[in-house]
Image 1 (cartoon, rainbow, N blue to C red):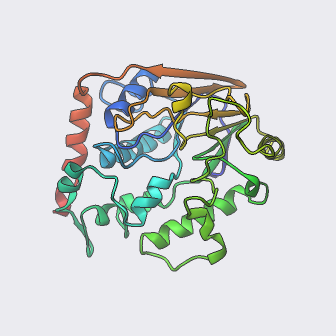
Image 2 (image 1 turned 45 degrees about the vertical axis):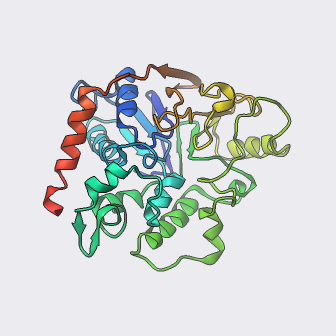
Length: 313
């Protein structure tokens, strides 16, 4: 499958930044009918796009990543697909920056050894199966007539092809994980906070008042979508606090072409559980209740994924 551009005749679901909240992820997936009571893929030929930032902040980054990896394999066997984008927090862990991890999870994973690495460093860097999976994440993807990107686009997007941009970020991920040489210096801005790149841009922030976004941005979006024969842009990264943590579609400043779906899903942020469904040209936001206690499935899957690490202790 060409990860930069895929076709999908069926329904597409997209979920914003999960940030280590396995319970929230499972509640959303159950609400959408994409998993069964055991947590296995039940979405048939549907497509699920995770918007990146699976890790950090919440209590179960490792289990969230594992479950997405599991669903990716199960969906493929069922004729569906699960695609997880690269977010800036995936870049953090690839770089060895674990400052956003909860202490409990750090302690749970500190006894892991893979090659000459241990703990979080062994899992997210080097050549573990999880590190390899992380560095293959696409930065952006087009499915049908919708383009998904973690943070957003700016003028640079008119000069980059899908495969070219994905390859550039893959190279930096591998370098940060310590398994590849340093890529071209003129692409380093893609990895920098403040650089305005696809995993860092703040251009799509949903503001409570008009007139504060780049006045040239709507024209850039028009040109970008026309060039790629697309109708909508979906992004995460920028929490929709100014719109009450609702999915921002239509976007209050950028209109129906842009959907911003980071609704602060993780309990660490305290927003709302949500997902976006796309069927043909129709977009439908969904919001779900957050439970007061963990689902039994959450506890069971968390125990299952941690038990798989015993071989590395």
